[in-house]
Amino acid sequence: MIILKNAYILTFNKNLDFGRYSVLINDNKITDIADSTPKGASKVDKWIELHSSNCEIVDCTMKLIMPPLVNSCQKSEGSLLHYLLKRRHYEKAEEDICTDLIFNYIYQDLPSETTQTDLANIYDYSFNRALKSGVEYINEFSLRKDTNHFNPVTNAFKKTGQKITLCYPIKQDINLIRDFKYLNPSYYLTQENLLTVYDISNITELRSHNLKNLFLEAAVNKEITEKFKQTFHKSLIALLDEYQLINSNTSLINPLYLEYSDLKIITERKANIIICPRDLSYFSNRYFPIDDYIGHGIKFSIGTGWLGEDLLKEVRLFRNKYKELNISSIDLLYSITKIPHELYFNFDQSGDQAYGIDINKPADMIFIDLNDLRFQFFPEEFSFESVCDFIIDNLTSFNVSDVMTGGMFTLKNNKPANSNENEVITRVNVTRNRLYKTGKYDELKKRKQAKENSDKLDMGSRSDDEIKLFSEKTDEVTDIEATEEFRIKTKLPVFRQKAVPGQRSLFEQIEQSSIILSDELCDTPELNLLITDPDASKQVEDDIIQASAIDETIIRRLGSEKKAEKDTKHLKSESKVELPKNVKLKFGDD
Image 1: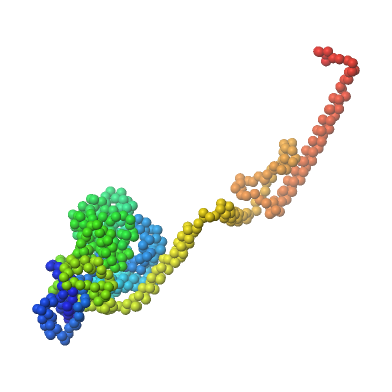
Image 2: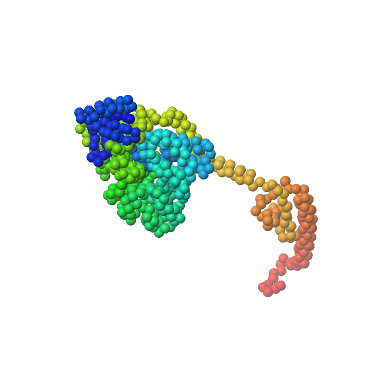
């Protein structure tokens, strides 16, 4: 039995009460509440008198108590990779090599013992961090399609005492749902471009076997959304609605490319929206139409997603980004407390009575330390709304000092009750180093830095001759490599064209003669005679002897032709008649 004495309590009950109260907890429920009036003080004294022997009294004078936070979308598998994941984009997610290598390691179908250890470290770290942040209810999302992470998840949340819903692409096996019912499994649909009608039929069957919630991380990529519409001739929302899969238990995560007809279906079926503000900031440049959802009365909740670490910071980021909408602090605080609890963790179907601080409700609450000089709280005249303003404006996870789950402290004085915090940090650092090594983070980082340095080089001060010299040197190296690549390694026969007598002069024939290769060797470079084999050189000698004989024949023939020409000239000179100098020829004489 525990008595929480004289605390500031934000009740979240029907009357939205706020004030100083004392709370009596027996087992796992709140059995009585006393206000700060004299009548209430006497009631507290009576509790102490009756239960002093077996009662723990906690002075909460400088504590603000409220119901625990609810994370609508937590992705523990990315909890160690925030700075790497910031490079991703909904439209171009395939460009991030580092995280792709890491996820291939995490999501392998047959994980090794080391991988199983890493999964255990990841979930231990993520769940303990969420506990210290005041998060007691978690929608845990995983991209795994097997059950290898079930045991690590089970061990993690049993230590922290949190309540979870495990959302992942479940294999179409009804027995799987029965065996892991304690995980409250839910179907998580992503990558709608891989969806088939067969898959939709299986989801419908799972719904008929008490699979309550359906989460759709769809319509976040324009190209995939358009491709789906071309394939099925309708949007994903319209297709699922035909199978009666869009209802109050259906939630869409960061839907960016919904059409007006989709919005109408969501409104009529009372489906919900989950918003991850930091993911939207880094993964998309498109404006998220939250004003349309609010205008149509669609319920929304806020989660951390891949990049968020502190749920209260996510709410503040969301408020600042959409400040022109003037969303009240009560609605913002409800988006991480009451609304997601009703949607995803109201297993007893008791409506509003399942959440809040009131008699006969579960003793689940978080304690905010007000002793810090940087976090002063003067609430004597505060209303419920003004306290919500204060929390949204100032509160972070570092102000949460204690967490009570089911009437027991799972976090007390910033220390987890069932985990060694130093051991968790040591183990997760080993896993983090292994993941970064698996993703070749250091290597890719150096390459990226080298590329950035080369891009920053100022070539304006370089002359054209210097740039040309560098280019010529590069070409020379390339030519040498090309020459080495095409070096002749076989012996090839050589054929020489035979000379035809009287066709050309002797010198023309020698200078212009060329080697004729066979058709199959036309593409082969010419062969140097110095490295020709002996058989080929013998054939060349025969050709030379034959060519010399032909040359002698030509020379003799040319000599005889010149002699005959000389004799002809001599005969002509002898037959010529000489006339006397005083004789003149008349016109017509021969």
